[in-house]
Image (tube, rainbow, N blue to C red):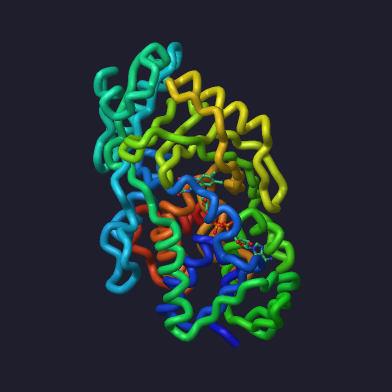
Length: 366
Ligand SMILES: Cc1cc2nc3c(=O)[nH]c(=O)nc-3n(C[C@H](O)[C@H](O)[C@H](O)COP(=O)(O)OP(=O)(O)OC[C@H]3O[C@@H](n4cnc5c(N)ncnc54)[C@H](O)[C@@H]3O)c2cc1C
């Protein structure tokens, strides 16, 4: 018998396990051999308080302190490294640009407009005739996703909990006052279940007879191309119409065509056409030859219908909690949503701005 059963070992489940381990024993079950195998291990690893709708931005801002000052012993690596984002305005997108600029101006470190010379100083390969205006989001940073994920999981086992891999939950039923899960690694009984199953979270809810929230997984493609030696210092470059982005990654350039193709839960694979579109957009916006793709992958970004994560107790199922629908922001908001989830499980009010009101509004956070 464990206090908390967390289903899913991605960043959501790991964060839930980390914060819950302060309140009792945690058993985290992950169906794959490696807990970061799905969305968590496939992200672009950006932390940006300029990104997403207002609740997501609030959750990102509420996560910053954990990233910059993690608890003692959490990790030996800096969790954030300055990166910055230059957002370009292609001709005709001036209205969208104004909106992005206005939104960016309200961030904790405001975004601001920069001229073409400054764009060239940040990233010399951007074509001057490709954009009419540009803005800089100075406080965006790279996340060490692996260090964050491992730090969360380590705390689960260090406090006497278990992280079970190759342990797929295939049955979930009430058992006395709690729950019993049948998994491929054996049965687990728990007082509380946390559904952190990413793209599969609605399927896990259905196993427990809990109403799904209408999650939609969408495939996003990314790939690596060769980059000049000095590219490591470039910011991420994107455009305000969201047709592509690129950012330095391990001596190469990570590129995405910002696709969002509805998909079923599963092991997402990159589509050749999406990769070709990404290459074409990179060549149009920059002078990079971008001929060879070193490696391509795809992952699922899973959202609720209004793109606000679902965090906290299910109103109709006692002891069943959600931490899902983290969309394209799951890594950057993990500290805040993990903490809020654990506080909700423990029956505490959370100190995260706006979160109690959102949870009390009926649909948890979404
Ligand atoms: C290309 C791309 C770029 C991205 N860029 C960023 C970014 O820059 N910044 C950012 O913050 N976010 C980014 N994201 C989004 C981020 O990756 C996700 O929001 C986050 O990883 C979701 O975490 P999760 O734990 O909910 O899901 P997952 O990592 O998918 O974890 C869910 C886990 O549940 C397990 N599971 C499912 N069903 C069961 C079951 N029945 N039993 C046991 N285990 C089960 C799965 O195996 C899986 O490991 C990006 C995503 C993609 C695809």
